[in-house]
Image (cartoon, rainbow, N blue to C red; front, top):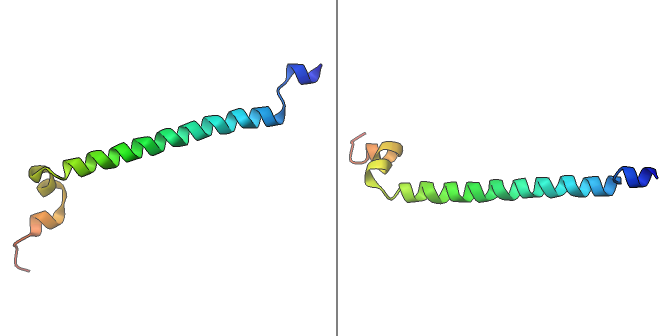
Length: 62
């Protein structure tokens, strides 16, 4: 009777690990999209000159 009322440890662990796995997959997808977006922004000369210090210092004698 108690077994019907409460899920087993294995079942609760499976549910927990499935939710964590989905969260990790979503974070990885988000980070890949963020990486691709940042790389696309670096193609823009204005943005690259504003964000990358080497672009600002190019041609300056040290």
